[in-house]
Image: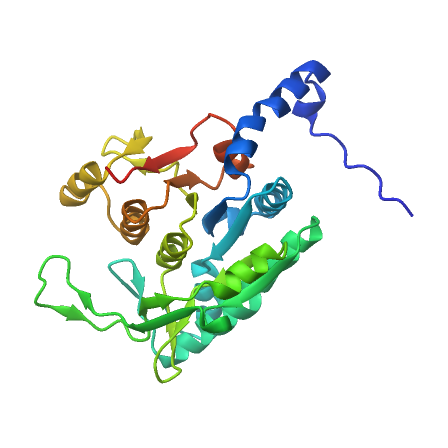
Length: 304
């Protein structure tokens, strides 16, 4: 039985055919420019929990793949981990934006990220015609890590023990390259492994940033629950250089959960990733708008 065609979106139905054609044609220069290029997308925030935004995200990923780009998804899962921990009667604690991860918490992190969240994303992408494959950092020996030494941001002589939280020592992108060359869409959970085979919970923004650097990606895109980087008055800063970001760190404009995001984004921009975007994942089809139109939907970070 043939599936009935989806009812057109009411706003779209009102657009004249000629205008529709113009809108589609405007994407051509971007499709041409980014054809064959790698895009690393950190998927998190509301875009991950709101069903209609989930659908939009999956459609965007598949469309980008079908027009010849190579999207790679790295996902977070903070709220899902918190929910699983609270069911077990544990409460998540954070130091400087990083989750404190004891052995029991690490087990929860592994099964929530690698089992539940990752497979949900794979299912979403496959349901709209993509071929997604889920990976953790163990697969193909992709993400090697060691215990993160976290120094206090105010007193560098103080070190915080955040448990099995890792920092990346090396990334072997061979498994990701093999998959994307074969028309698959890799979906990566931010779990690394150490020399003794122990697991590490790694900040997903950091994983996305390092992966983008190693692959020399065209773009790194971080989906967030904010319009981008805001100044103290709450105004969006659409274009930032490394020097401007250092100033925003120093005066406390960038703090909390934005810290690891920006630090990773800055590293990637300095290490050869052409463009790093922090975009508002609450905007439907934000990725398509950012990649295929000249409309800016967030903050772009430049290395100089």
